[in-house]
Length: 321
Ligand SMILES: NC(=O)c1ccc[n+]([C@@H]2O[C@H](COP(=O)([O-])OP(=O)(O)OC[C@H]3O[C@@H](n4cnc5c(N)ncnc54)[C@H](O)[C@@H]3O)[C@@H](O)[C@H]2O)c1
Image (cartoon, rainbow, N blue to C red):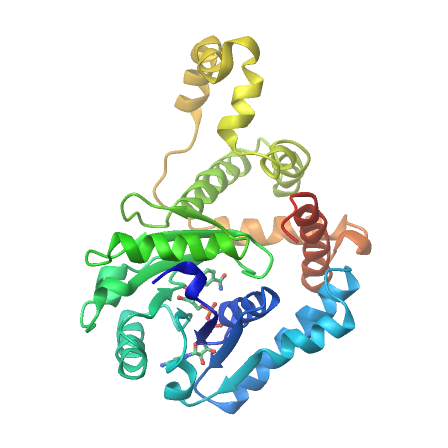
């Protein structure tokens, strides 16, 4: 199959991730079938899609007329056959559990064409294991989104042991054609690429806080107004390339090598967060929220609204919206 043959998709499992995928696919003018177990779950997905669209309208991404069109392209059903029988691509966003995902795979395969690509949103389970009882394991891939998928362009793609290169290529082309930024893992890795990078940074946040070097609030501030601003534009290696001047990235590393070695030796390498750190982090976050004005978010709801507004502005700068 060719990426341009994908005109209709199904979102199987319509919770936090599934509803957002459905919204994104429809925003990109694809017809979407949304499947979940009950009418209540589907109603919740419908409400979340509507609320997210209103937020996009508030930020001038879509008009009122476009909202009507986007919602019209989405069909909701609790009947698996209806959801998957005539689609070329399925995004599975069910619970993070092998048994459930394997059962979902079996059910999807019963009613869909053998050509249809099945992409799991799994955060960390192995595709080979999800597809281990499948009739056509060659068409299963992992397509790990970042929350919320309708705003974050990254999708991390992985193969299972039987996935064909053609399927992976088609999926990659498809995501690119709808303005996603897919990256392909050359081999399976726990936590994919970005969860590992995020956790490496957060391990050091924890280390600095536990050593009394800084507060949670100041570590956040340092990232937000320092490297975070640059990382929103380019990755850490390109940032270092510019930092190296005429010597480039390798020059920077050689120039700072003795200093970097001292830092690396002093940094955290623990394999588990200290037992009391979650409470310390929570208190630190509560303290930080107290010091923020409402317009940049000082509780979870206003923080999420501010995040989405800023994300949308950034995405417009990146020409991704
Ligand atoms: N939440 C995140 O930040 C995030 C980010 C990236 C990836 N993921 C992954 O996405 C997947 C979904 O996570 P979520 O956060 O949306 O979970 P969720 O609990 O919000 O949604 C799961 C949905 O699956 C439905 N479901 C349960 N059994 C089903 C079945 N047999 N068939 C069809 N649907 C079924 C549930 O009713 C629910 O609506 C997981 O694999 C998770 O690891 C989550």
